[in-house]
Image (cartoon, rainbow, N blue to C red):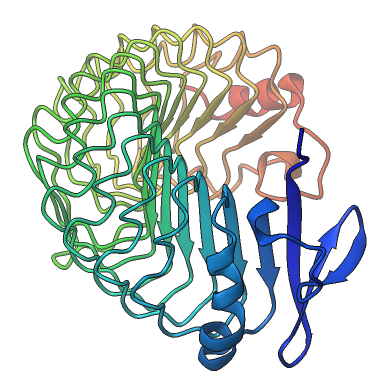
Length: 401
């Protein structure tokens, strides 16, 4: 049985390529190295267009049995039109840190076995029509740090095995209804640091196995993003949701109604001012909730009454002036609580009496009377020891109503 060879290219001197096998370096011009026996290949350092086209690519073309290819840290600005046409067994492709602005029209056309695709830190601004249409075995897709503006029609329509999708730091403006309609096996969707100002009705309606959804640091043109009423209605397996600084507006009572398995909920740094009654009441498995840096004025009386497993609640940097009388009475597992930088002047007596596992709590920068001194360990200072429940309750007695 022929042992599969792993080769790494290092550019030490111009036009001299070295390979690594069992930690021994070989000159790739050595006739003892058969390119047809190379299955896993990586090369690093700066490779310009001339070196890539006339010296390196001819060697790559002979590696017809490649299964994984990692091209990192180069200054290549264009790829040959037949790039990768001979790699019919390719399963993993990664290309990082380059100057490519466009992909060949038939890029990846023969990669019918491809399972993972990663393309980061590039100047690419569009994808060719038919991009990835033959990648029927694709499981992971990741593209990041590029000037991509549009998603081509039928993008990913044949990726029926897709499980993880990530798109970060692009100029994409909207998520169409048809995107991912065939991704019934997807478990993770990440869309961070883009410019999404529209999510269409029906988006993600077929993602019945989705467990993680992330939409962080969004920058829409109108500085606000409204979710459709049916958003996430079919995500019954969701356990993680994060929309930090997504510029999201108000949500209604039905938001997240089907997310009964949710454990982590992040909705910080948005435009939320009002929390509906019974909001997330069905999320009885919730561990963490982050609602800081919104404009929340009031908490409903039933806030968090069903969250018996809650460990962390972050409500700082809002405009909350009053805490409901029964707030947090079911949170006997709570460890981190932050309600600093609000408008509180009084709190309910006994707040936190059952927080026996409390490790850190912050309540500074509110509207308490000036003669009320807040203990140092209840202020934001990471160098101080952990807060004790006793210290917290002693302070609450002084400001309770």
